[in-house]
Length: 152
Image (cartoon, rainbow, N blue to C red; front, side, top):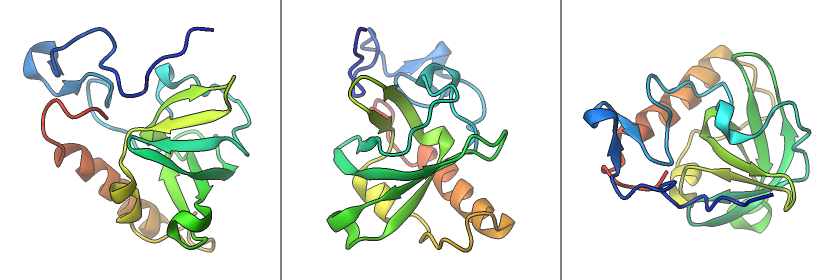
């Protein structure tokens, strides 16, 4: 299986595609960002991702403790281990850029700092609509805060 570099721009040096209409190479697909759905090109399908390592754009953040494949409500819960003092973080499915099943790694398109600054995860609130709105809004907004050409 050919492995893709999660930091590459997939064969183009031009950071903005589609005539500047907001599609970034290696980032969010053209159109509206949907935080709660896996991208078709990520390679998730219905795979069991529990136990896979998670790589942010600037290094590892932990292992997947649980994963959801709910239609329009998918997410990963990552045990960060010593990185954030044993806390867990919840990542909406839309942040998954690529899955390498051979190496059992999931690549997300956010930096460690962006993930650390996200609304705090509480195991009792993962299904709470207010928490999901807040978390989804944070990740949706963070796409707009990255400068053009930033690998996502």
